[in-house]
Image 1 (cartoon, rainbow, N blue to C red):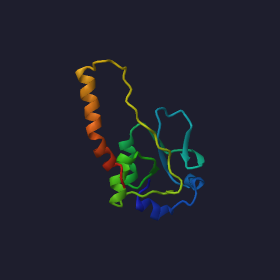
Image 2 (cartoon, rainbow, N blue to C red):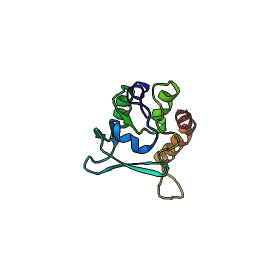
Image 3 (spheres, one colour):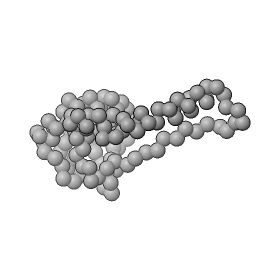
Length: 133
């Protein structure tokens, strides 16, 4: 993801390898681990200008026009719809990840577990809407 201002200034990359000429900021749990983006059938090792474990920080930087970054759909969809962010390489998508709720099976679930599962289930339509571009 990048802001239209950054793309206007630096151009739009045609292939993943062209990302090396862009200031990239990445999500990682540790800053001392090499950063690699899987973009479709391409993998690219990055030398990021910033590594953080805060997607909101990455989103703010991208919206400000200072970096190219990866964002989860629930953060990127609205700015993309509003044309404040844009996909740089839509033909080379980032991989999708599944989210699972795992809990030990019991004949009778505790009230807190049942309440949490009901909450998650009731919010799935909102999450799907938030991720739709």
